[in-house]
Length: 163
Image (cartoon, rainbow, N blue to C red; front, side, top):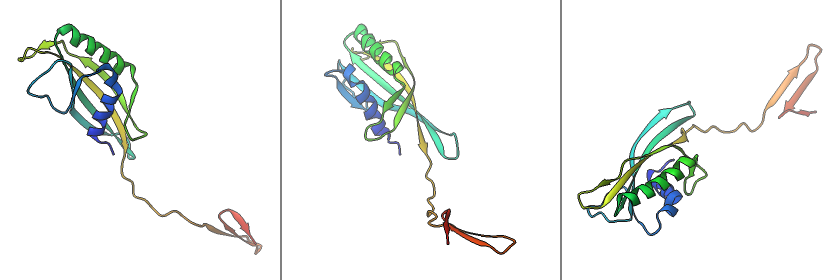
C-alpha cells in the first residue's frame, strides 16, 4: 500500500543532492522562514479506477524553496525542474515500486512578509496499486476419467497417465 509520508521522503531523497546543507521540512511551512530552506508537502490527490484489478493514485506535491534573492530561488527552481522533468520515475523507498512523474512547474519567485524570497514548484505524479483480491486454495490434484464406446477407460491425474 502507498504511504504519503514514504512518497514524500522518496521524492526528497531523489532531489536532495540539489539542496546541500538546506533545512528540510515535510508537510509544514514554519512561521520563521530562513534562507536555504525547502518544504515538501502533499498538496492534493485523487483515485481513479482503471481496471477491476487496479486503480491509479494521482498525487500533487508542493515544493517551496526559500533563499536571500530571487536569482538564488530561480537557480534552485530551475535545477529542480530539470531533474524532475528529466525523470520518468522516482523509486519509492523500501519498495520495488515507483512514482511515475507527470509534470513539474514553477511559480515566479516572490518576496515573503519576512523578507525572504520563495519559489513554489508543483509536481504531479501517479502510482498504480492493485486492489485487495480474495485468495482461493490452489487445486492440488486433477483427475480425469475418459470412457470410450468400446469399454476402454483411461484415468489421468495431473495430466499423467495412470495404469
